[in-house]
Image 1 (tube, rainbow, N blue to C red):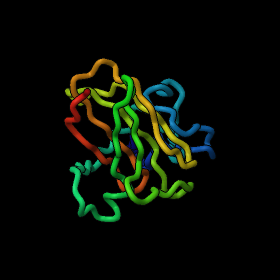
Image 2: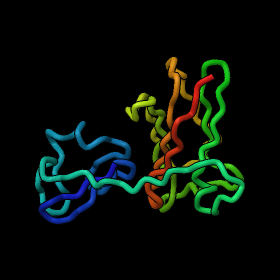
Image 3: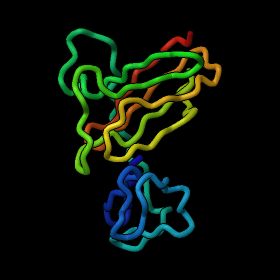
Image 4: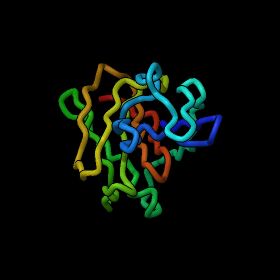
Length: 156
């Protein structure tokens, strides 16, 4: 998630962190609320508001754009596991300027069941337990192209 400092407009991105000020990547702002200070104006975490992300909903199609294709989650259910590959025909970039920051498994109500934070290396697939879900959704966050979501997948 990304947060905006309402005092100075600094943006804290949890997937990137701020290593210059010793905030590690993938650390959630609410986990550091007691000691987090804005690196620009020194305001506390209470001055930050979540930036609502644009959500791109994906449906299977033979006519995906290149942008949709590199963010399309390919999902397979095998032996009570849910396997997610991030790319269909073309690999998503995995470098410090452009990468998949997280993949999340959500239940049929849209609540996060499990979230995996990724680093800049290419990962072929992420494996989640099924958690005995009747339906689930997969959410992918790209640090540049916002959030990609595939909804209403029926469990086997």
